[in-house]
Amino acid sequence: MDIREIQALHAQYTAQPVIIDLSRHTAAMPMLPAPEGSASGSLSARALMSRMRSAGRPALLALAIAAIAGAGGVSAARIWQAMHTTAHVPHDAQTPGRSAPAVAQQPASADMPVNAAPPRPLTSGDLDTALTGGRTPLSHVDPKALAAPTPVIVAPAHDVQPTTVTQAAASPIRATRATVPAAQTPPQASEPVATQPAQRQDPAAARVAANTAASPASQAESAQAPATRPALRPIHHIKPHREAVPSVTHDVPAAPSAQPTAPAAKSGDVQLF
Amino acid sequence: MKSQPLNVTLLSTGLSIHGNVILDHGLSSFGIVDGSVVSNSGLLHIGQGGMVKGQVEGEHVRIDGTVEGDVHARGVLEINGRVKGNVYYYGTIRLGPRATLEGQIKRKSELTIENSSNVQQLSRAAAGNA
Image (tube, rainbow over the protein chains, first blue to last red):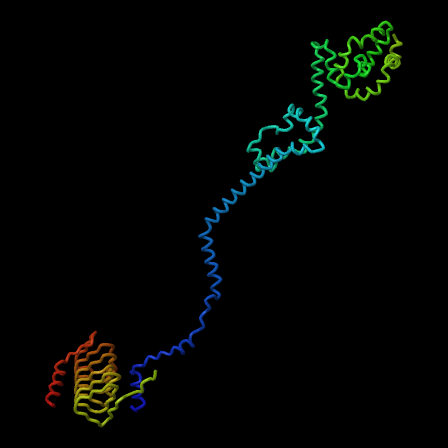
């Protein structure tokens, strides 16, 4: 056994010194990934998922509250719109140009509240768009339609009121007070009462006149008839009063010749007698 | 950190020592030692053809020759020779094909000083010399 073998044998049992070489170890170590490396994406996703899970229930509550608030706002807006339209329709109708008819309309509208009010009281079911398919009963109501007929109704209002009055006057009870409706109409009041039968010329009156013209004996009565019963004829033929109004000026000059014209119109029928 | 150079004492063949050999490093003995051999560190190697007539105590002990006395090993003990005495070891033991044991093998878990009488004897011997 030579010396080399002895050295090798002793080298096997020699306590190896512990060498700590930090620089060598750090150089041999692999490069560590950056703190914000590829794992940051998954880490952020996991953090986001955890946050979503933690914030899921409050988010759902917030969404529910927002949905309820939105639905309430929409319904409130619809109610406000409906109230606004119904409340402002009379204001829209009272335009400056129509101030005079509007003033005259007020007593007439008191007689017709149906035009200003909805056909039936407004209920919550009417505001529910889901049940009515998005169309509320108020949607059928046209504010302009409500406003437009009012001036139109004004004109008949003048006729209605005299009509009721005249109908009341036409009752047999007031048959003797024939001058009362004539006094209520100022343009007709200035004219003599005897001329009213001539002013109320209509086919029926012409027929009566033709009958009177057929008999000479009754012709004298026909001359006196307008004086004796002037009120009955305007009472029975009050509706064509408007139609007869333009004929007033046309018939006024012809009033003296009313009697000769009557036989000429139905001359054929009269001559048969 | 600089590694320590290998420090080994070599007792070649044809050497005869009467007395105890105490050293703090490794030893390879191919001679004849009439006394105890104590090594604090390293390998205590009794080579083939070597002989120790006394106690052998070391950290790592490898016996390829002949030991007539007790053997104490604190670490690895390899025996591929002839031992007449008891064997005490604290680590591992390996017996080679040419191992001859005439004694008992005991393994201890702790390092203890058994032969306190020897220390007293040494102190007496030192006092006697003084």
